[in-house]
Image 1 (tube, rainbow over the protein chains, first blue to last red):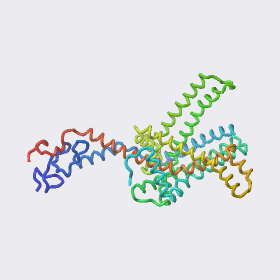
Image 2 (cartoon, one colour):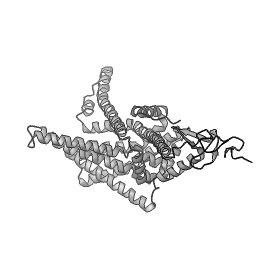
Image 3 (cartoon, each protein chain N blue to C red):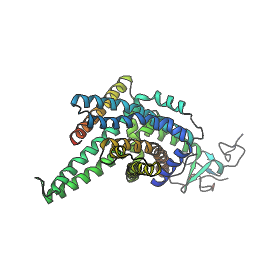
Image 4 (cartoon, rainbow over the protein chains, first blue to last red):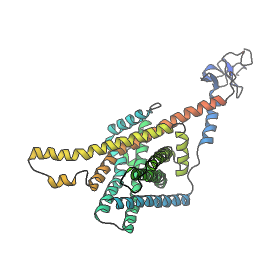
Length: 92
Length: 313
């Protein structure tokens, strides 16, 4: 059975510190030191997942929204190509 | 294998190198997709010049070009999917890349159409003040005025800078939509996030690519008449009519060489934007991780000394 001094992830190893977030004892292998800050690998992964889900934009709308967007894109392109055509016709 | 953070020149170098190493892939995806639009636009200029099209005919031509934009969007999508496969060391054959792009056809079309409309409007918005400046600068013109010429030139430059920055910040939307399975609006938002703090690089990249395309176009315009003269020397025949048609004075010739220059630059443009997207993702994830670490308690978590961590061994 792991003692209070054992690493949470490696019960056979002696812990060398305690994570500031989850307070679990961890060994040096489970510690990630980035830019001077020591981070427990599990907590870092959890935070990264949380951050990723927060910043990830919404996915596309339904088929009706897509159809409206496609028609809008087509009409917008037609309008701008038409403007260019009229401009070129007046120059050429 | 993904390259590390890249400079603008590094992005273009990687794009050229990728196109050089995988010519069949870029020809069957990016170039094949853009071919109908490039040739359609050149044919449109030729028809406008020779057929005296009315407004309805011009509108029909514009609608046809809008339809031809779809294969370009799909070709770019397939190209970006292929690039991601190469970077992940899992090459995607062209048919599979086309299938992946086809499955997201509507999203890719919309994501491609929006920046294209903005770019074309931006160009028109820039041309307006510059035309006024040109008219004002001409002493024989009715509008001749030094003050007006200066103000209109400044306005044109200002509109050009803002419009270019506006378009460049949204330029990553297509690779994001092709590889991230996002809708057009979400892809544009993500593009804005990735280009945040990188606008000057985005504008520099697009300006550099535009400059390269102009060089290719001028070279092509010049090299065809030179090739004809060389052929005259070699064969002894004269190609007077052909030389008359294939010259700077013929708008149709300029339109078709413009289309060829556009097609030559398409793989470099598409792959550069693909690399810029990958570079943006790398930088953004690094910046996110740094911000995340800064938010974490600065107390020594794993101070690596049991006593400092609050317990004794």
